[in-house]
Length: 322
Image (tube, rainbow, N blue to C red; front, side, top):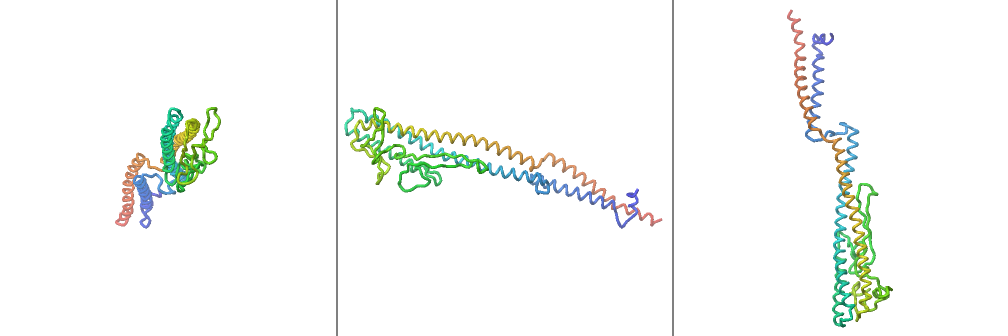
């Protein structure tokens, strides 16, 4: 009854105020609906959904870390691919060296022919050293046993590369890359004499085949009138070098396998977390389009109701006319 009584009061049009309040709410809903559809985001401000905004922010931060970790894995695989390619080339050099040493170990060859073979083996050794110095990724000289280049020095150590493969501090994969050059692949004794294996399987120091430890030929083979027995003992040294290279290749392969597995895991994690963030943050366009139609109809009815409410006080003129 009070609602009808309000029509008789002209200073305060309650029906018009109610209609305007309703229209304002509808207009605000339309504005929010248009914002969600124009941005594609269901949550554009924390006030839209404080809990959802917080959760989605954490998920997006994790996705960013996982994406970068995925990129890091790709870089790590590139580093190891470069090292593996050089390992393969060095292995080819050692295999050729083995064939030449086997030839020189045969007593049917004379001193001149052995000298030719010595020159060839020396050249192969120089090639191995050159491969070591030229295998570089970014600032890393991967095969010289040090983290940076240091002139023409030959290194026999190794270094560790640690790859960040996740968004947490502990998500790492490490690998040791041992030096690959003549000095590191061939055991030497006093004066750089190569230590081979004699026919009885014992260690034999080959005085006529040495690895230079100083001077311009540092790290290179030097042959001095090497005879067939020297080459026979040298075969064992080459076999050890080939085995050492096989171990290096195996280590690279194990790390590559771990990286490939981590790559799959990271890709799945990125997809899962992105999907979770999307469900919270992204606009459901089918739902918003349906809501848009509903709000537009309500807006039209609210405008009509407000117009009628504004005309209500006109009925008071009827009383005055009487």
